[in-house]
Length: 137
Image (cartoon, rainbow, N blue to C red; front, side, top):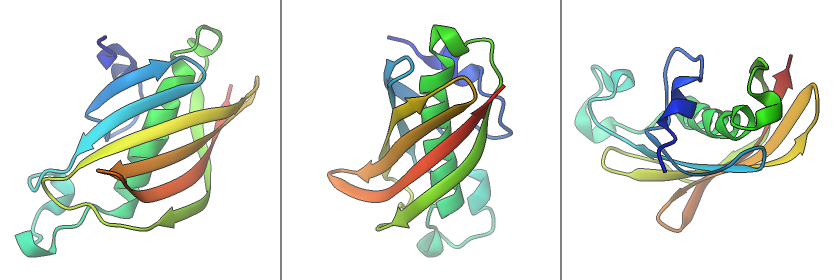
């Protein structure tokens, strides 16, 4: 199934998710991010020093969770904004050539708040986990 229309609805200066691979509106989204040495944030960095910045990894997880919320019929016309990250843990690094599986599971979705548990994997190894909070208007 093609979920690109969901990614096109994300109003962010940089879309960090390359592709959504599964989506359960209001419940869960899974996406992929392939790290490329030519990404804009690597400009001027020597190839052997290129590591995906943690903030970009978090942004990809935020956008994955956002996709699960805005795809739900009850939140389609709502403005959903990133509010906070809690308990972020980074346990690995992503370098050019890596494909990251982004998994966001929504466990609280109310009129004004959404909360998800987000995990990022390279192969079977979890490289990041975080709780992401969204404000909904």
